[in-house]
Length: 195
Image (cartoon, rainbow, N blue to C red; front, side, top):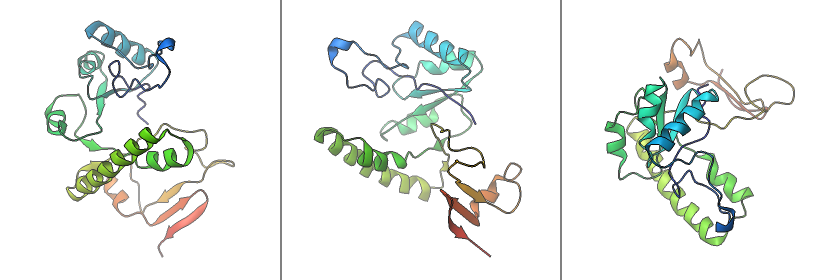
């Protein structure tokens, strides 16, 4: 796993994600404004053992600090107008990957109890995201998985979720093997099994 820690961004940007009243003066843990603040936040994130620096697209100044400290940086982007610019820019990554966060809308619908305004905004953004996901996959853009992690994944042990896939061979030596998954188990239930 490549662990990023907090996503970094500007005040009032996407990563400054709390809805507390002004009186609290609350700021997201990854918020940084200006060159010195961004440098400090990148160094602090690396101090706590981040493998790479994840930033919201509005915080491009993080990339240089990450590179100086020998960390790759990745950018989170929710819309497409500046996507060609982001792909062309040097953010220290190895190629461009599409990382869909497909589960989020389903989870939010079931658990978040959002105010009507935010619920409708989420549904609008979700519709655009699903359209863009289909376009990206049709264009053969590389897709990667990103997760916040959990104490119920990552091992085959009693009490874990038992989310398992199987391929023929070792995908660590040939990742194309992952293009043909012959066995899938989700939460202990076999979803696919080829002879």
